[in-house]
Image 1 (spheres, rainbow, N blue to C red):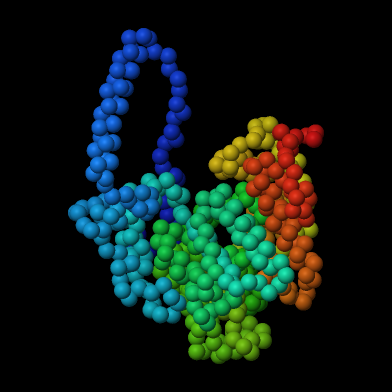
Image 2 (spheres, rainbow, N blue to C red):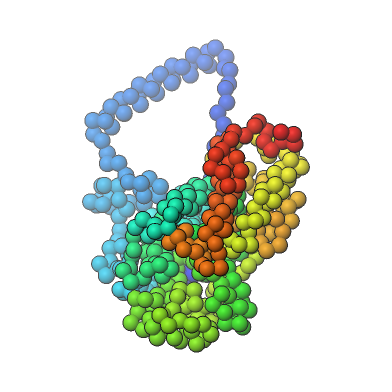
Length: 466
């Protein structure tokens, strides 16, 4: 278990999921005498259980809460907390000076505090609880007030459904927030208070994954390749040369990022927040960043330019543990993607028809079996669909995330370089493309890429002749 001397920040957590699979029940035919003996024994056992059940009913024991059910703590003494099914022992949550808010009080010693909490709540380790080795919590959100743009609320609902679908299928928890956690950190700055609070609310999570509300997960079969990030704490889509050489504020995108739950990250978030609108030096930061990145920033800095500035000016401190990459569409620019989605879908269906053992791959199955069938579909796509898994600027693999930067679905006024129609059609195409992957387990798909109507799938879909 990690400590201050061995911080969580750069360690790869855990191993493969533990526990053997349950064996299926069988039916065994027994000889007569053995059969009778077993019936007698079963009857006696049932009587004993009935008596025990009655005693339990007459003198009920307290029912543990959800946390205790998922991760029973080791009780060393009888206490008021333990008698109610709550974990005994003090943790960082019992510190009255602990603040979830940005800028209130700098939190130190987080790695040791988190390690102590994990030891108390997961004495046998996270893997023993049946969860993933490195747990991920997705964080997203939108404004609490109704959207100004026509149809904006419906689009936000569909964006939310898309995230819920992905998280349900891939074992990721979602925190979607509509509350403003800091009155001055609005719009794109609101992500920082949300992510920081989530780190404290989920000490069991190794990673916090921020997605802007207008980001669509367009490959339901793709999982984050966390093993690639074992030596890093912050994962961003971008280019080293654009950030460090060209000093471009467009060298990365701050709308989608993955950050490790550790002290390094809390320190980084605090440094990032100090450049935002809650700071009395906000306007000065805007001028300083504008000069460094050669952009106009009269009204203060924006979150993305501030992030580039932090990495540029503190490469050893922050940049060394930041993974800037474009290996796949960790965050894909929608204008490069949406016109290709129909062809991508067609290539995936063709791959399923031609794949070895295609009939087994096309079998109907429960949604709970998604992981096994996703792995099989990915293997089929790898053999016959060019491009990197998760999509990219070359090839025809599904894009992992399609981000509608500049479309402003809630505000209703997209960037002047886009038309409302282009944005609206693109968002519908991406959402339908993703939804078809979900509906397949329910036996349906959309009539077309811009249609809200659905039709049932024939048996054996997608067979060669239908």
